[in-house]
Length: 128
Ligand code: TYC
Image (cartoon, rainbow, N blue to C red):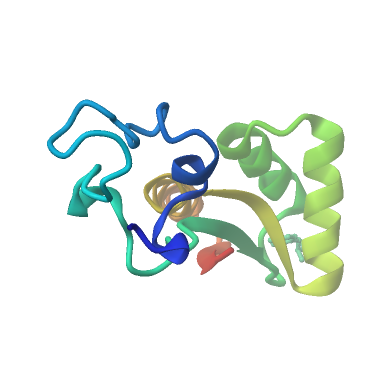
């Protein structure tokens, strides 16, 4: 039998959808031999989401930060202004939460764009 803690939620609530519970395999129904080792997981999956953080500085113009938030995080003017002012007042703010590769790409895009425009704006990643 596959231990409770080693199954995914889907395995538990909908074994047929998850590809488990095939009665037709060797040994017939409920012989404890269904599924494969690759369907089980020793540990729960690690969270793979990352926050993209914007950092305050004294030199980057507010308008530039708003432009960055609109361009790379698809915010409208109101959202972008709110996030920019939050970063300006608190020192750091969240631009969005994404899978690692997308978060990393956005950080690089922001840093490249800031550098091209000679602003010291900093952007970084943090595990969500
Ligand atoms: N503090 C900057 C200024 O007063 C504005 C600013 C906001 C800079 C947010 C960076 O991430 C930032 N011009």
